[in-house]
Amino acid sequence: MTARWSVLGGSAAGGAHVRAGISGQDAYAVHEVDGTLLLVTADGAGSRRCAGTGASLVVTLAVQLLVPLLGDQPPTSAAAWSGWLDLVGERLFRRFRRAARALARAVGGIEPDDLATTVTVVVARPPWVAVLAVGDGLVVVRAAGGHLDLLLAPPGGADRQPGATTLLPNARAGEQARRLVARLPDLTGLAVCTDGLDSLLVEYDGSRPCQPGAAVFAQLFTLVDGAETDPSTLVRLLNGRRVSSLTDDDRTLLLAVPR
Amino acid sequence: MNPFALFEEDSDGPDEIPFITDTHRRRFVALLIDTSWSMAATQSNGVRAIDALNRELARWLPSVRAEGRGPLRDVEFLVITFGAGGVGVVSGNGTPSAEDDGAFVPASRLELPTLVAGGASPMVAAVDLALTLVEQRRQHVQAVHAQQTGGPRLILVSDGAPTDEEGNPTDDWRPLARRLEQWRSTRRMQLFAFGVPGVDDEVMRALATPSGYFPLDDLDLRKLLDLILVATSDHVDFERVRSQVYGGDLR
Image (cartoon, rainbow over all chains, first blue to last red; front, top):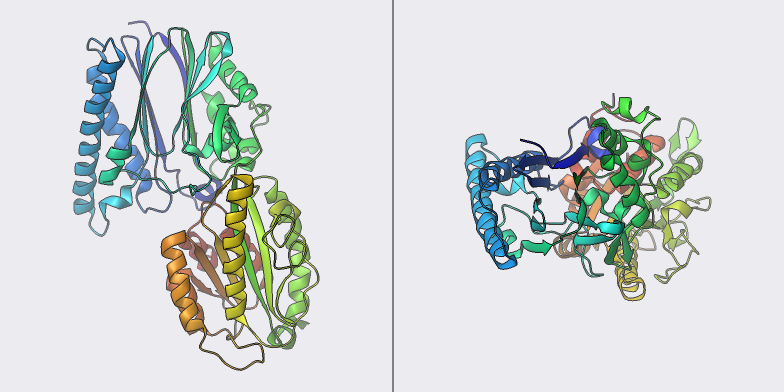
């Protein structure tokens, strides 16, 4: 099987977690099956005791659920993809709620909400890109000519309080999940990240996210555009002084380009 | 040791990437400092506490301004003192105004005058003023600049008990505690209260809740200011501050 995607992924703990000597609360996974790419990121809620475990759990469940499906005949229309996302979301959220309850019972002294997390699932099967998201993840797509679009934008609005996001396993999180399907025949790149990076990567008009930063994404995609990529590059970048001086949050970034 | 120091020392990383450094968010941090007579009467290593505080503030402010160009670039400070001269705004233009260029000042530009100690300890009036100005500032930033505003944060430092403007003991902190509870539940406000020796623990616990109150064993003002900087960070909770206070992990 020949891989059809080049992918770089990395994650770094925010300054608060580093100084406290604990790991970050983001998690991610990348899988490719027969040219269909699965990217998953999750950002555990910093205020919750077992948020990192929640993030790892939802990523694991997403991989368990989706990888066996990726080899199937993919949907061939936007409506079919949309229905597929509904089905996937329903199963994933139900499994996470069930697992969180079981884990809370087994551990004792914690509640399922202590595993609160976001999740962003991206399935790319050109020309289709499908996104399922709970919380404030970010997905950027690049088309031919380097044109960038915010496929999944961070929630905006002046009256929105940063960090005030409905998360899994809250039952309303599923209702409020965002499901997006795009047909992108000239897709040349995908980026998925957690909210720790959104202010560094997205240009805002007031409180409204308006577009991906062209200069920053142009350089980020060069990290994965080359014939041979250095897997450590992105990790070094996310842990580097520059990024650490600009954000204290955990941050995860996945970059993918079709070969 | 920072397990990621290895990466931080690596200068070959692609750090030239032009990240966006403007911020679309504002966070309001109100710092309330007790400057009542006891700060003039109390000695710290043979120095009046207020003089030691001014000296440590002069050391602390450059680090705040440096952080204000990085992780604290979305923070606007409001600094209020209660003591000599009653309740007063000492940040920005020194007036109780929530307009631009008023009492609120970005962390990168925070400067403070030399603080003067004396008088009573009108803590309740100071917190009231902070709540009023923070709410006015939130409305202003949303209406005029259309920017997101995070939950406000109050950082209260005291070495005594609340009084009225004339120095008489007051129970006005009881209704204030109820009001603060409403702010916590409806506006995601966080109150970190630091008590230095002489403080009324009951009052501070009532205002900040037991989780948000951190009594300090001594008048170590450098440690106190470092704690205030920790409490200003975006991703911080009471547990982290508690570990910094009592875990022996201070710089």
